Length: 445
Image 1 (tube, helix red, strand yellow):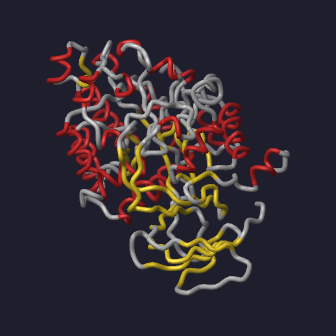
Image 2 (cartoon, one colour):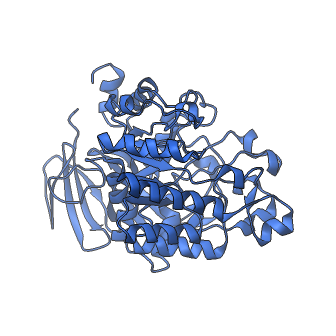
Image 3 (tube, one colour):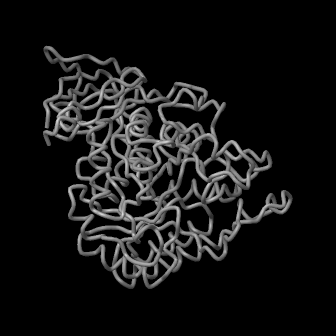
């Protein structure tokens, strides 16, 4: 690793607690204490700021290779750094699909060359996301990318026999299958959540049971084979109850919720604005409250952004033709602060658990999600909890302009992001990528 500089962070509130100084040297938190001093260190005044572990996203769509009109690894990881992330898991639905060692290694190399965050490719469960044949799971696990998470996200692995085989296969290398829970026969032609609003608007409904039935099946399969299951973007109250039931019985299941499902409801679809079209769909206020409660009590383990940028022409069209998906990397922290911390449901320590620690554990990232303690890797962020800002998609680093929070005032702002001891973000703006990126680009691993 390239040697990084020395930084003295003064007066940061660690996890929202007592203000302390942090000395970061050569990628490591060297010391924590009061009135620290270090000759030659770059001093950062962090009075009033909260120090947190760098955020880890278990669910990011970087689109590259093949979808560079929507996003690239470079633009997506710039957005991630600005949003407070030091690691992201890049989903497999690129073009070509990340279903071979060659493709996941390409994504991994692009991430290292960019140098903004740690990019961990997610491998496809099935060849071409077709749901017919298992992909090269073992080869992807043994590749330089060291893939540990596998998902056909965007498409459900609906064949129970194939899902069982995948769960059995990943046990050999402590992998996890991340399921997009959607029974396709129950959602054919669906445009939004099935309920009162869909009935009024005359749009084909997407019933909650389409999600819940797959989750119920898969937790039983995971129990049967003794494997790890992760449930992507949980969106219904019933799903929360099924996951809670499974955890009470010791089934090895984890789950994520997106920021937008913690705040937005299907009532927004009355506007017919395609920015609110997403998979799974926005649900009811009762679902939102259940998701918040599930995240607060640990039933739902993590917040995953499901960052899904699209070219403008794929969203600025009539509702039925619009692509599904929303951006989320640069707004996630603020939305979770608004929905969970400002409502009293969580503390900043809880925030660190659901946005960093638990996510790193699911992805088996040993250097991420670590405690803010001396001797630990310096993957951390400084947040101004008192800041207020208005979301402007055109001011963001992501290429996607499809933010459902456009024009909203949100709390909290990332002031600095330290990735492996290097400030990729300072004073709320991009600084420089990690020096290792230059070495990677030059062909020095």
